Amino acid sequence: MDQADAVRLPDAERARAERDQEEAVRRELEDYYRAGRPPWDTGVTPPELVALVEGRGAPPPGRALELGCGTGTNAAYLARRGWEVVAVDLVERAVRQAREKVGAAARVLCGDATRLDELDVPGPYDLFFDLSCYCGIPPHRRDGYASGLTRRAAPGARLLMFGYGPEAFDDPVSGVTAEELRARFAGWDLVDTTPGTNPFPTFWFTLRRNAAAA
Image 1 (cartoon, rainbow, N blue to C red):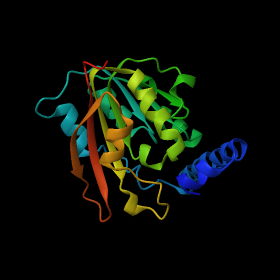
Image 2 (tube, rainbow, N blue to C red):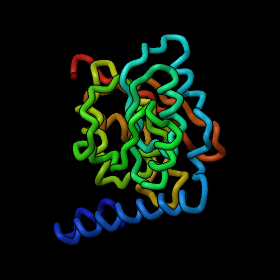
Image 3 (cartoon, one colour):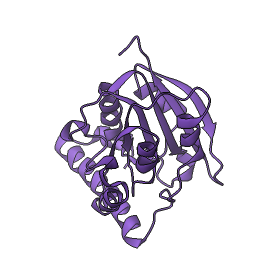
């Protein structure tokens, strides 16, 4: 079902279709973890995150929120670098592994990155990290993701996001583009878009919360 079809459905039918879509995403993620390590959960912290945290112009350690933390590799890395970390994932199996990995160094919560108001993540946060979480979120929940981060962003906060381009999916509404991020993240500036090194379209996006809009 594409977005045009969803608009034409009666409200109750559209709501049911959206719930079914969210549940399908949850089941697919659970299946990945049940079968073994998902392709996005490599156990290695991406060099792009290392460069942001340790490279030239790196911000001082503050408060970080990771969306779609998987088994906790990057939450553990940020905690080792002095950040106060909260990490969220939708899949209970991944959350259990992440809690074992990070111990008391970070808080790991099981929940929906598009419904942060239901979790104990009041903010403000100086850094948000997303390793292919947003690009798999159904379109009708993406505004919830963006608004949840915006309400919790400190002035000048950064969002580092890795995402698959739409061409990497059979589903035409999956994936993420720079144009979509500019449209959805009001009050943020898209300051960098760098293609990934994968054999299919991927990108690293860096957004900064506009201090004047905060």
